Length: 236
Image (cartoon, rainbow, N blue to C red; front, side, top):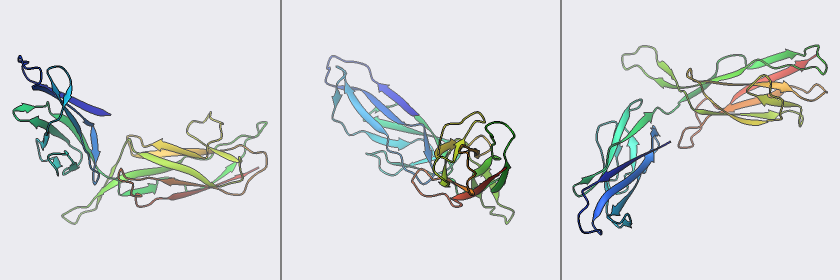
């Protein structure tokens, strides 16, 4: 999502004067990542004109590292900060940006080895248990108490079948799916959990099918705990 803001001044007789600042920026920023907003100055004719637009943070949630580029980082997570562009005495409306915690752990929340007994239907069909992982941010206690694990919702987790006979099995997000999918991205729910199941497609029983789950931060770093590895075996 992109948040936009426009600042306008009263229009005089000189159409060449700057009367508006148009801005745009993502509506969220993850810890350790950087954000560079966009801004343009418009004259009375609606044309873009060269101008040095400066950026400031209106609170301590965000820190602007460079006031001319607007390069911004997170200072405090799980809050909403505000950026503002200005040109002389012309100020944009504040842009609200949510700050997100960076994930620091990915772990399985259920079985990692599952043996599936095929149903008696023709052709036989069976689903594995849910292969579940939780993506979370761990907050260390300054008082020496136990760490707090905070689930992270709305984050992508990539599942992949890394070992199986070609076409032998598929990843499914719904129990009715049958299309061959060997690589899929699942978004974590409100509880920070993502999951897939495995469905057997081939007639011949394969060896154990290996599935991995991986997560990355916005800056591309692999989240510790990745990959989580699951093993699924089908039997008559």
